[in-house]
Image 1 (spheres, helix red, strand yellow):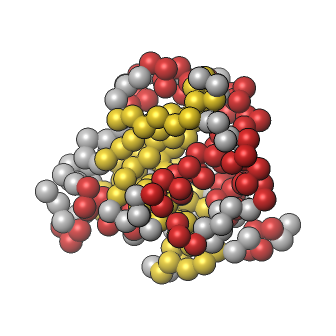
Image 2 (cartoon, rainbow, N blue to C red):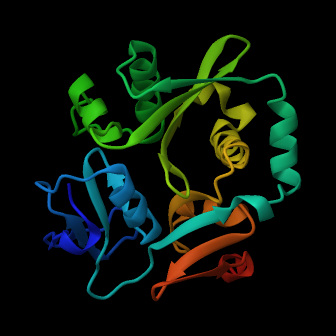
Length: 242
């Protein structure tokens, strides 16, 4: 098994940024032959890395530092008014925690979500193998958390349990249930679940001030960002001056 000092990082080639127009992006990623384990992965999460399947990476762009890793300190979090309304709407929402195994119900929901939110006509729909390769992993403790509204599968949150928190990997939901704000509720649930597990943080991934679909993370206050190697507070005014 790897230890942190033995890990080799590779740089990807440049490509168009998925979040910001007219920007070029590249990533530093852990060499795919590295045998990771939960302890090393936990440390990498703390250092601002994310995972996509078994690939662990963080942005390493030449001329841009817009992607800031974020985490919510669980014990300090207080829901705002909008989030409290979401909790009220979901008072009867039921959760079921499952392992990272293929479930055809989850896959159908994932396909529905992608068609509604990320439809790209020139791309083939994901296969079952693509789906598991993206969300699963061989070496970390991953949960697929179901959110059921009146018995109907409304959302699935993919969550990694690490030594010092939960890492929110991905959430997909039924667009027909958008009135329940399932994406917001999934984050709130993870914060409360981490509190129950006595874990200090929920890692939400990258906050990008200039990208509308990545700004939502700033709403979970207090929020910390990893800037210049130090975790420090990120406050709403830093992105709401528009």
